[in-house]
Image (tube, rainbow, N blue to C red; front, side, top):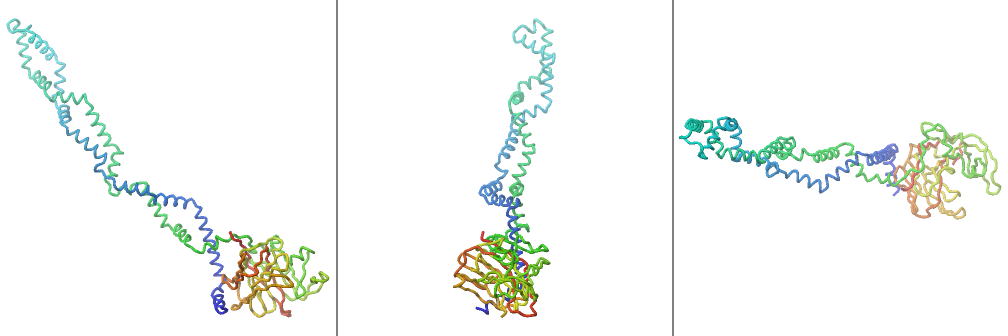
Length: 468
């Protein structure tokens, strides 16, 4: 098991790659969320809903099944042709376009016709006879033989005359004109062209929306979004909400977030103190920030401080070493969640570097990562009481912890503690789980007094999350 873990740690030793992947995952998720809330996606969803609907499919089917043959448009064209070819309209057109009608109308108003009609009436009544009024009779005969008058009566008594005036008095001409106007309209011509076009659906607005939908499907932004949708690792982002973050971007330590001494020393006497076993005293001067990295320095130098004595309290003392500590004892505490920091250490043979957690009392105590002079890394937690502490810890080996930055993390749930290094699980504990809010401490201190002690704990960032 130890060999297997060492192998996994070596494979995950490239912290920058692990961090880049995490950063990319968060960036991808932010991009995904932004796109998910965009108007562009909402329009796409509406298009997708429309195009996949039964109404759209039925409309498409109906349009594609349409035909000019058998349509109302074809019926009207046939109706117009039938009316134009009808005997009544042909006779009407022949008379209207010929000379008979104009001669007829002209003759109707002539004096000769009027005179003839008068004489004809007298002849029919017996008032005019050949014997009694020879001269008038001869005029009557002359008019009767007139080709104009004969032509007039021939047309008047013809079937053509009757049909012409019958058509003129009917609605036939208006029907034909109305149909001609309708068939010549832009709307009729456009609709006819549409029905004759075998690709008529492609001329519709519905088809344009289908093309827009397909183009969006093939666009890079949508392809990327769909790829994001399929990512199984987005849950790693969605299930955690950031509750604390420090990137050390300012040139000085943010005192709103960080204390630089033990919590109870600050609360009880507004001063620092050391534990009886400490060879060092913490000094704020040993905290340096540059290039967005906090440096907790441990060095050999004399300094005055206090030591906690359980019998007599705080006692003044001179220390041969100084070191540094930062804590969120006053600013941030949390029960359960994900706690992680990117850290690099040096000289673990003589200095113990730790990323740990405490509540208001000395127990429970959680070591997210603590170096040891043997070159191994300790993770674990202590619960119970000072008289009967319950210790659960693991020794992690396989890497040189001073070689590079590593991401040390603890996932704390009500029923489990899981320690990771660069996302590799190194220890899991399901017993004696703490259930009180705890604060973060990052510290260094002399573990092996040595005249050459000169060590540093570099902290790139610290982040905490809670389950959403």
